[in-house]
Each structure stands twice: as structure tokens, then as C-alpha cells.
Image (cartoon, rainbow, N blue to C red; front, side):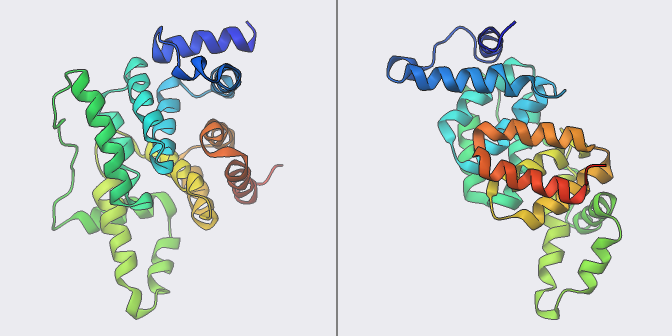
Length: 251
């Protein structure tokens, strides 16, 4: 099967029998897009379509490409992702892209869910309370990053101590502890989010190491970042791959 046949088959699996609007105005561009994304990138490496769609959702949310996000929410449902998994992936963006952009993405998701008669709100995945969100978040942080966390906290100036406190309780306590997605998946999605941001190479390197620590190997990370390429472009993809190669050198 050549890449054109692959792209046609994959597109139909994701989006059904509909034809992209751009075919009526920009058919050459749409062909290039379809054949590259759905005929090549989707077949690179060994990720399943569910993880590929979760990755696509968080990169589109990060970039605020909301019409495409909405289309991929439908694709995510079509490949068998649950409403909980879709919501949790986008909730995971909040510590990195901020609340306003995350809310924009949630609005698009809710519109699709309403059109599919998916009841809102979906079931809560909360697993912390006010009195333990810091401790549980810190425990997850240490599980991912190890001893570097205590060193980071000790080295923070006194007038900035609230930042690592927020990081433990908010980023890791409020989000990483939630149900719906496992730790390895959340760490993969975080790597994609910070890679898509651009200019966050220090954080990309940290999360490359974090992924390695939770069991996501280099080949998987290369495939994951490759999947981000059509949505965030070559510069950010190459920067992210440089970070992978720096943290996990080739033998």
C-alpha cells in the first residue's frame, strides 16, 4: 500500500467519509497535508491511534488551533478514546499553557460532546483533597524526577519558595494525580506540550529525563515528537529532538 492509499484509509478511519472543505479551494495543499500526516507520520513508529490522537489534541490546544482541535476531538472518539481520556489530556495542558488557553480548548471539546449527546459534566477524576494535594503531588514529582526535586527546592531563593510549592501542589497534585490517564501517558503528553510551546528547551530536557525515568524509551520519544511535527513544524520538532539526543545520546 503506497502513502496515498494509506492516507485515504487512515483519514476515513479518523474522520469518516467527509471531504475536507479545503479540497474545494486548495486541493494541492490538502493533498500534501493528507498524504504527509495520514500516509507517512501516522505510520512512523509503533504508537497506537489512541495515543496519537491524544498527542494531537494537546499540541493543537497548545497552539490554539481550535478548529482543527474540534475536528480531532471527533477523530479521538472515532478511534475509541473515552470522553474522560480526552478531557484529561487537555486538562493536563493547564500548568504549561495557562488557564485561558485551556478553557478555550475545553469549550471546543464540550461543543463536540454536546453534539454527540455526551452528558456533561463527565465523571470526576479528582484524587486529592486540600489537605493532601501538596504531599501527593510531591510524591508524584519525586517518582518522575527523583532526588533532583529536593535539590531544586533547597536551592530556591527564599522570596521564590512559593513557585516550587505551586509546582508540587498544582501541577503535580491537582493534575498528575488524576485518574483517566496513567503516569506514563501524562508524562508523554507533557513532553509534547512543552515541545510545542517553543523556547522551553530546559523543560523539554527535564521531561525527556522524566519520560525515561517512568519507562518511556528513546525510540518512543522520537516517534512521539515525530507525530507532533505536522502540527508544530520542523524548528520546534528539531529542537525537541536535540533535547532527546542530549539527554539520551546515541550509542
